[in-house]
Image (cartoon, protein in one colour):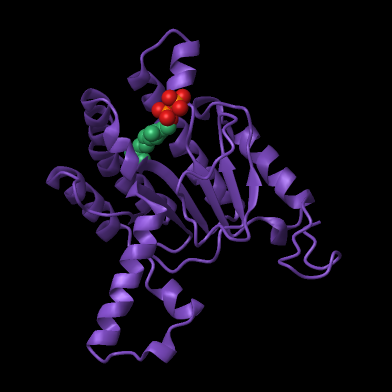
Amino acid sequence: MKETNIPRHVAIIVDGNGRWAKKNGKNRSFGHKTGFERLEEIIVYAIEKGVKVISLYVFSTENFKRNKSEVKYLMDLFCNNFKRLEKKYQKENIKAVFSGREEPLEKRVLDAMRDIEEKTKNNTKGIVNFCLNYGGHAEIVDATKKICMDVCSGKIKIEDIDETLFEQNLYHEFPPVDLLIRTSGEQRLSNFLPWQLSYAELYFPETYFPDFTKEEFDKAIDVFCKRNRRFGGDHNENENS
Ligand code: FPP
């Protein structure tokens, strides 16, 4: 596989922790804990392989509708692990960032997020973008508000608004997503990165996320490499392989 075939930006909808737990006679919390262990492994592996940005849907704005004890378990998992990941990412030269709204996240969660972001901000090998309390429509609304404020204050004119300027006002300005993976067999985007996914290749393995090993990730990259990406252009242009 040529190094140039590695997708620059991979996005993953982490799905199937609950079904994996049920299948293995465990509770949902155990599914999330095991899912997190897998996630930790995949982030480092993907960046080691040459992926520059990996975006992970770890908690959607809609996930707050879940049972209170499950939400608390996930919030504890975030808080407890960001501290540990901070040390690991310093060593691995990985930068951690977050996408999503702050409201209604608790202060302890926001503090843990800000802390890892600050400590890893100068790392250069790759970026992990945790989409936490993230919603794609909310991101577009938030970007629109920022642009309107800049128009109202006279910083920019309406004529200045184009795709580039819009992208600059999203939570982060990253290259477009090349490959989207959603585990567990579900074939939906569920309000994940609607702007950034416009030209992404979509891959929906049946595997529940806690079973999504490095080998499964390699399989996803192989599938991506065989796709013929045309971006609306000619059939033989932009082939991956
Ligand atoms: C979806 O599976 C998974 C989630 C809503 C949570 C994912 C979060 C983690 C793996 C923890 C990440 C931790 C850190 C520190 C980044 P589901 O519960 O919807 O599964 P189901 O559809 O089978 O019920």
